[in-house]
Image 1: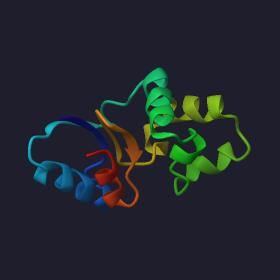
Image 2 (image 1 turned 180 degrees about the horizontal axis):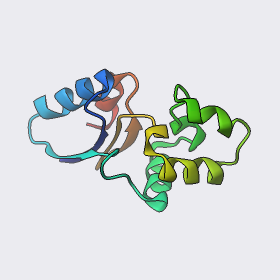
Image 3 (image 1 turned 90 degrees about the horizontal axis):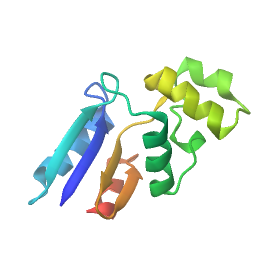
Length: 112
């Protein structure tokens, strides 16, 4: 099975999710440090749709810049995430079985 993780190595939840993926037998894993290689707007929208969440639900609300997006449309949230990838909540994982925002890390098991 193929799996892709949008990963931030400084995030404990992201590291835990990555470790779970690495421990899974038969996983062909792609790790994307999304702060260095951010997804495009269309890709991010596709991942959120596949995960069944809105861009707002994928927003890292703890970031200071997220406060300016209160009441913003999904399009505005996506634009902000593309312009400032730290606003993307992590980790976001996609497999053949779907996509999940893996908070907590155990949510990754839903798509393995």
